[in-house]
Amino acid sequence: MGSIFSAIGRGINSVISAIAHVFMAIVSAVTTVIVTIFDFIADILCCRCFGSRRAGRRSGRRRSRGTSRRAVY
Image (tube, rainbow, N blue to C red; front, side, top):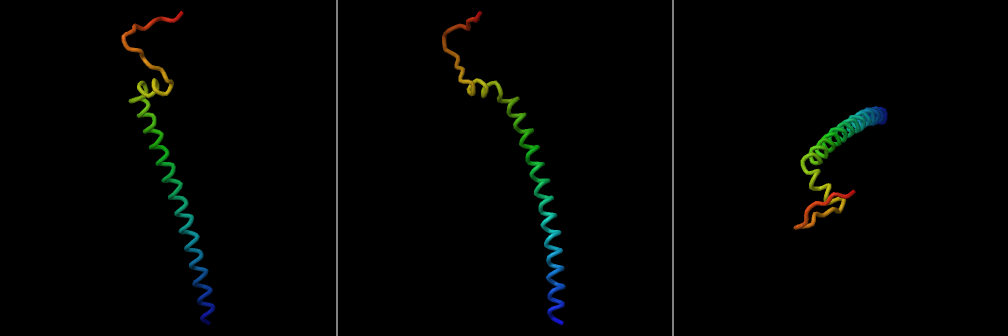
C-alpha cells in the first residue's frame, strides 16, 4: 500500500514540477523581452544625446587647431 501512495506522490510532484518549470520559462522570456526593450530605448536616447561627439571619435576624424575649415570641391 505504501508503494501506491509513493507512486501517486511522485506523480503529483512531477506534475507540479513541470508546471513550475513552464511558469519559470514564461517569466524568464517576459523579463528578457522587457530588458531588451529598455536597452533599445536607452541606446536610442544615448545616441541622440551623445551622438555627435561619439560619431567623430568612431570615424577617426580630428579637427586641427588654428586652421580654418576648407571647402573641398
